[in-house]
Length: 252
Ligand SMILES: [Zn+2]
Image 1 (tube, rainbow, N blue to C red):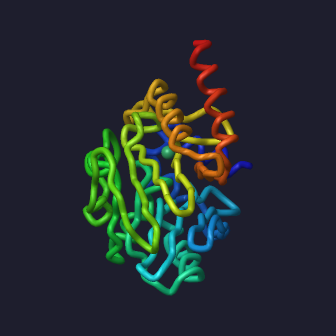
Image 2: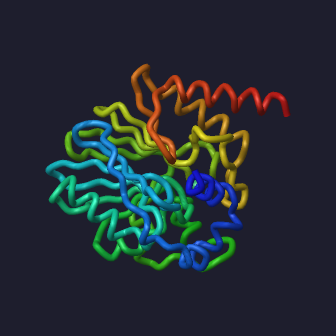
């Protein structure tokens, strides 16, 4: 799909990321609709249809409020809010950024202004505040809670672990593990449509990618759903992807 290749290109090329503010300002986001996909009774992911919307968005709902994972591009914030509103009448309480890229953090300013607490690895805040090139993110768009190795949230009956992966896609990649739902959101570290994207400009490495995929495989059980940037797959798919990646690395 054209929008898929664009999405992956953005997450693979730091040069493209620098153009988020201008190039994507020219994109027509009006044609994009948000599709809601159910994983469990209270865990969903949203993806954009009809254009390059950015990475998918995890949504945990319940009496304690809504937890989001990633927020696509800024022009889509209202559409994301509407899709979430259709799932829950509770306020959006927290937002986790899986990594720094603009197709996963583009809505931070909008959601930050709503009072949503943004959570990410330490390096995501540093890179958003002081990017190697391009404009720094607004203060309200920065994660207000950051972590170094691992942290836990206890929300809506779930135990949610947010953990640092080795420097793979970037040096601020998080996995998010939902213990009850048995779901791991792997952000852009895991993709099913091609080889992993390594953004060296943001600290990503091939060696770290192999280690990160290994870590995700090892924390997954036989029925764990592992959510990549574009779909939900079970552990077997993850294993195949990892095996291909490792064999490719061995051949280099
Ligand atoms: Zn990315």
